Image 1: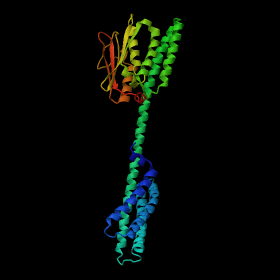
Image 2: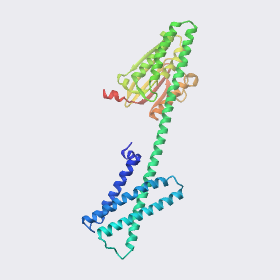
Image 3: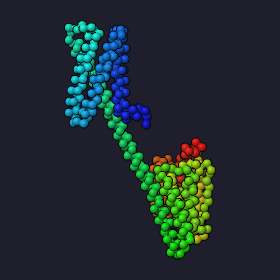
Image 4: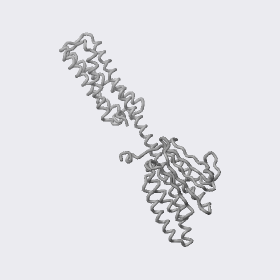
Length: 363
C-alpha cells in the first residue's frame, strides 16, 4: 500500500500530522503575506500565537464532527454550522486580544468594522478547516470501502481456487478406490496393497500443498510419478510414459496437480481402450516468456469441436476444472488447447507465464 494511503488509514497519525502541518503552514503563509507590513519579531510572535490558538480551538471540532457524522443530515448540518461559528468567534476574540493588547499595546480602534472583518476571516478559515476535515474523512471511508471490497474479492477468489483444487481429490480418489476394490474382488491382494501404499503417498503430497500457491514443476513431476506408479500397478506393461522436460523448466511455477487430470483422461480414454496398451507423452519447454506444457497419447482419439471434447470423451470435471483454475490464476494470460495428435490420439497444450520461485532466484 502506498505511504499516503497508509497515513490516511491511520486516523490518529493523520489528524495530528495534518493539524500541526496545516496551522504551521497558516502561520508561514500569513507571515510571508504580511512581510512588508511589519518585519519585527513581535509581529511574528502574534502570528504564532494566533496559529497556536487556532490549533487548540479546532481540536474539539474533531470530536464534535465525529459525533455529527452519526446524526441525520439536517441535525448534522445544524451541529456543524453552530460549532463552526462558535469556534470562529472564539478564535476571532483571541486574535483581537493578541493584536490590540500585544501588538498595539492597548490601542483600540474606533472603527468596529475591523472586529467584524476579523470575525468573517475567522469563519472562512475555520470553514476551510471543516471542509478539509470532511473531505479527508470521506476519502478515508472510500478507501476503507475499497479495501473491504478488495478483501472480499480476494477471499472469494481464493475460495474458488481451493474449491477447484480440492474437487480433483474426490474425482481421482473414486477412480483409484474403484480399481482397488476390483483387485480385492479378484483376490489380487498383493497388487491392491501396493496401490493402497502408493495412494497414501500421493494423497499425503496432495493434501500438504496449499491450493492457492503454485509449486515448482519438479514437484508436480514427482506427484505425477507417484500417480503413474499407482496406474502402472493396474496396467503394468500396457502403460508407457515418455518424459521430455527441459531442465530449465523444472524450476518454473505451476498450479499444483494441473497435469494429473490430463494424464488421468489419457489413461481412461486411451490406454484402457487399447488391448496392447499405449503411450503418454509429457513435455515441458519454454517459449519466450511462457512455459509450454504438453500431454498427448496415441489412443483412438475423439471428436473435437471448437477445442472441446464431448463429455463422454474426457470433457467432464477434469478438463473443465483445469480451464477454470487457469482462468482464476492467470486472468486470461494463458491458453488451453485440445487438438488431434497425429497419427492418432489427443494432444493438450497449456501455455502459462514462465515464473520462477524466489527461493530458486536466490540460489
